[in-house]
Length: 227
Image 1 (cartoon, rainbow, N blue to C red):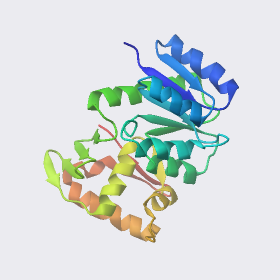
Image 2 (cartoon, rainbow, N blue to C red):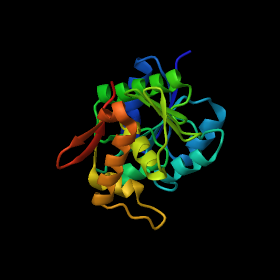
Image 3 (cartoon, rainbow, N blue to C red):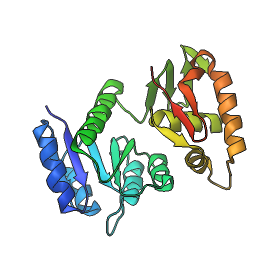
Image 4 (spheres, rainbow, N blue to C red):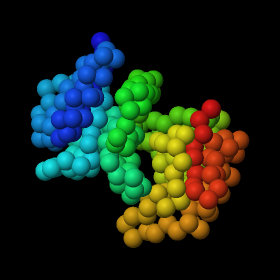
């Protein structure tokens, strides 16, 4: 049976483009114009992937994401965020909130379909994209907070574990120093560029032969390279 995809976006123009594109690819596609209608549809249908707009009247996309992740029934639902914002801050908020990917408006149909296909494949291969991350001889169990590198158990600090998971969730994408620092700064803890550098250095040392997966993009930030 084809995957069921729900688009929650108040833009009729976006829906008129996205829904037919998804159906043409063989997906079962649904549209809700706001968060409340989205919640109602999630109760009626077993949705496999959610496309969620950040900016909506009433309950925003980020607020809806937070509520979904607090509910056991929807906590592991794969989510791609739609945003018109170029700033790292909102993207980081979404990723920290449990989103798996984001795409910036305006976007092309082929780009969206590629993201959808990739996330559905990861979800099916791993059983649950939120509970386990894989790549470059690394395996991260998010529930047990365990990391193995080339088959060997690695003990990481909380900050190192958080840094690794943030990078792995965005494989192939360059995350700026500022984005990573903001993502890891919370609860009164501030992560400066110097602190971030130290965390990366220590993380690489502990990952041993798998350390090359974390690439330095000089003058910009870091990127996780999958094999």
